[in-house]
Image (cartoon, rainbow, N blue to C red; front, side, top):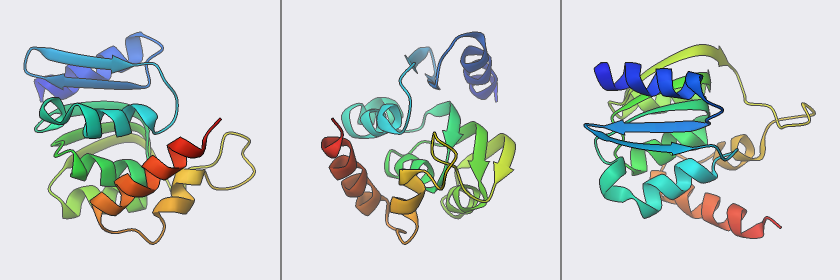
Length: 139
């Protein structure tokens, strides 16, 4: 619980998008979107495993990435019902400020691309593959 409190406070105190706390270690990102979480769970696997994170937005895709990375506790400023379901099914503790049916895209004209990618995905490794392809397609 102390790690979760520290992560939430760090997220609030700066213009950060993702904060990880694991014991005395911390990892902070200011990048937008799913990229920081993706990099954390695919490139910093030892750090991610058993860690606590605070993130501005955790949708279903983010929750599946957290399962893949063996993250144990999440606080999201904004999350979805589907993300909560994924976390609870996989024994990840999740707290949040606001829950919505779907995360909107940045233009507020529809669902975010990650919501669309994650819709029919239930296997964390499959989500990792889909996010990798998506990130490679970005300019």
